[in-house]
Amino acid sequence: MNSAAITIAKNRADADGWCADLKLAFKHVRSRTVLGDCQHYGPLRVQRPFYPEANLAHIYILHPPGGVVGGDRLNIKLDVHCEAQVLCTTPGSGKFYLSAGSWAMLDQHLRVEAGASLEWLPQENILFAGARLHARTRIELEGDAVFIGWDVNCLGRPSRGERFEQGAFDSRLQLYHNQKLLLLENQRILEPQALDAAAGLRGQPVQATLLAFPCDDSHLESARSQLALQGASSLMGVTLIDGLLVMRALGSNSEQLKKQMISVWQALRPMLLGRPAVLPRIWAT
Image (cartoon, rainbow, N blue to C red; front, side, top):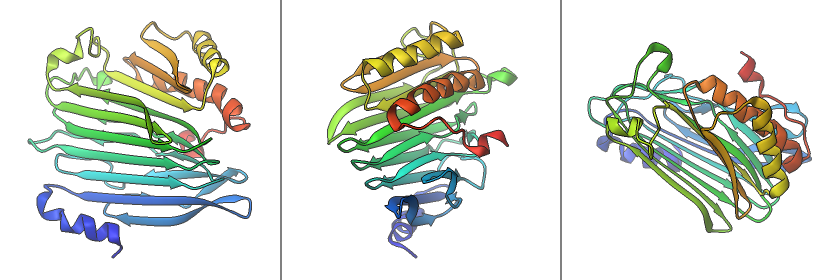
C-alpha cells in the first residue's frame, strides 16, 4: 500500500462513505509526455495515456461507481513537470446524489511547472436535489506554465424539471502564479433563495468558469469574438486580470454552455500552445 493509501486508510473511520485518492505526475521523456507516477486508492482510476497528437498526452480520469453520495471523498492531485504537456478530461459527468446529511468532498490540486502545460477539461458535475458538496480546486502555476481549464456545475436536473431546492453547494476555486494568488472565488448555495438572487444564480441552474493563463489583450479579444459568433447570452462574460483570462457563464443547458466554452478553448489553444484544438476521442462516445 502506498503512502497515499495509508493516509486515506487511517481516515476511513471518520468517513461515512467511500474514500478515493488519485495522484498523477507527468514528465517529459524522449520528446513525449509520459505518466511517470500513478498512485491510487479507492474508486478512482486513470486510463493509460493516449497520443492523438504525437507527444501531448490525453488522460481520462475514471470513477467506476458512477456517482458520489454524502460522506464520499474524492482527492485528485496532478503534477505536470517541466516540458510535459497534458490534456485531462473525464468520460462523463460527475454525479452527486441525495445525502442523508453528510457532505461529499471533492478536492482537486493541480500543479504545473515552468515550461509545461495542462488543459483541465472535465465534464460537468451534476448535483441532484438534496446533494451536499464541498468542492475545492487549487491551481498552482510556475514561470511560463500554460493552463487552460474549466469548471462546470449543474444544480438539479433542469431537463427533468428538478430544481435544487434542497441540498447545499460550497465551492472554492484558487489560482496561484509563482505563489501569488491571482484568483479566489467562493460560492455557497446553502438556501433556496440563492438560486434566484441577483447576487446568486439568477434562476439559472448551470454555472461555468473557464480560466486561461498566460493571456493578454489579444487572447481577450479572441475569446470575446468567439462568443459573439456563438451568439452568447448576456449572462456570459470574459475578463483579463494580471494575465489571467476568466470566462464566467450562467445558463439553463449544460450542453450549450459546454459548446461555447469549447469554442473559446479552440480559439485560445493555438495562441497559447501553438497547436490546433484536438477534441478528446472520449467526447465522441
